[in-house]
Length: 495
Figure 1 (cartoon, rainbow, N blue to C red):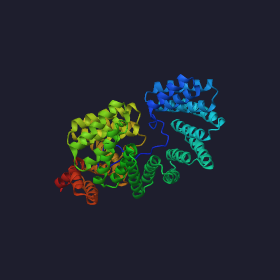
Figure 2 (cartoon, helix red, strand yellow):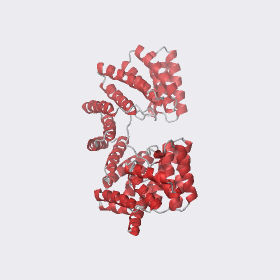
Figure 3 (tube, rainbow, N blue to C red):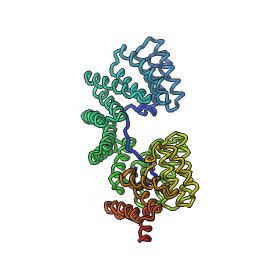
Figure 4 (cartoon, rainbow, N blue to C red):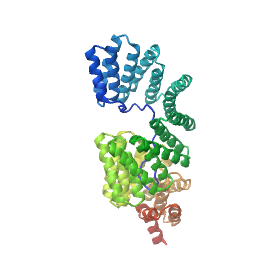
């Protein structure tokens, strides 16, 4: 989480699997494939008709139409007793089922496709089917099975010297190992994929592999290497006119700069990511890029522009039905409004985010939102609402410590519970939670106890951060932060 934005969710770096399966493929020309299908039908060529329909199913945007095409391709191929064509048609149907959120049915089709393709001697396509089976297994949370299948496919592709297939399968294996928490092994897989793509001069694959490598390097704590990989990915994608990959690379570079506190640099890459996605009209990915830019603009004090970005992200998320992104958008928008002292509208957005979190049974999100909702209600003087937030947060945890030091301190200030004061102090001093938790806990502990030593803890934490910021405008923006300004003002008044 960007610690300058207390209610901001993480805007995370991206890992894109080689065979994502979540969106239609765009390499082939839909019109050319449709013409090929018509010609095959006119000539009475069942196999060619099956192949054209299978290829068309992979690129058609409307799922029902893609399903119809893939099913018809299977029937034509089966009637012509063409195992290879039927196998490719079943791969297409598996891809469509995966896109439609039906991983179990996709897995059945892809397993049948593998058998048919092996029988037809199309080993490379059979191995592609194995990788796609792994995607379905991942979505069914059968990660160990997915890893085992992919390891076998990588070995087989290497033995057959299918370099492109080995590369894409390594990317899928890396994605699976990452989900299993095996990030070092995942990094090794992706590094090998980078080598293969670089040696073959495959720019699209190289750009994607470098984006994934930068993500793994970030997660392993190697920011310098992550930034180098993201920058190379951007350069490769930009030179090859690959705006999708360029947007991903720019987003990862922005994330790394943001984590290092180099916000002005992060904003340069945030701008690039937003511009590329807007040009492509990639509405599914645009909200995350807009939210990342909103974080950067907020840290630099560009509050109106940040509000505009977060509001756009919210509108797009609602229009596309992306509930998770809507939740993030509401939280970031609320954080900006909070800093503007627009507490009433900030509270309304937090309430909306809370409803989404409850509906999704996202307990961790709900707990974080309740903490900042209590904070906002407290600043508005709505002590009844503060009490409700604390009570609900207590219902969500098995131990008081899980509430975090700030919410425990708010509870202590609200209810004057000595046991909660002691727990909040212990949690704060153990650095449980981030900087915002430490600062806000100290403020509310001062309110609960009157002990100005708590204000000094917060002031020292703030000043250390301010001293480490690389740009004067960032320090100025921090000093205007409502959360921190009240600490300094309280300390001055107490002194």
